[in-house]
Length: 176
Image (cartoon, rainbow, N blue to C red):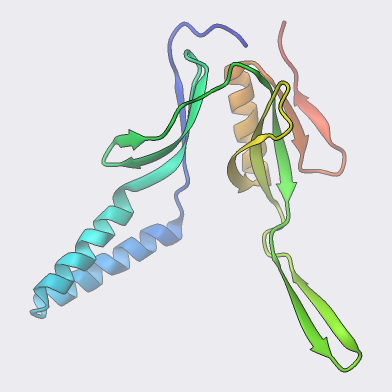
């Protein structure tokens, strides 16, 4: 890995529009309850909506100290345990299919029904030297996961392996 002159931190925040919608609706219902003489209930709903709007989570990578951590952040205060990146071999992007399998009894026997809703998602993983199990970092859409892996690979100067397509390939190699 290359030497960093200054510490640059990557911080990815999993932020969904649905969370913002829920926070907004809770705030509106809180205001309505507050003005309709349900003061305590209204204040609780408004406080919860503010918490949802200001809470973030993700991961952070510190290239100068060669460490990474999962981050939970509220009002700018971050928490999480740092883990070492000293023996990082490469970064892989692994495609996954998440869904549910349902076993339905029929006259002819049991039938399995598969629901593959989340095709096209991937895990960003750190693979360490002499380790049997990679460290899963975050889940993304496939295209976004490849972009994030390349950005982190460029930052840390490590190789990136793309497993989201049938023709698995190295999409970034180390610079010498």
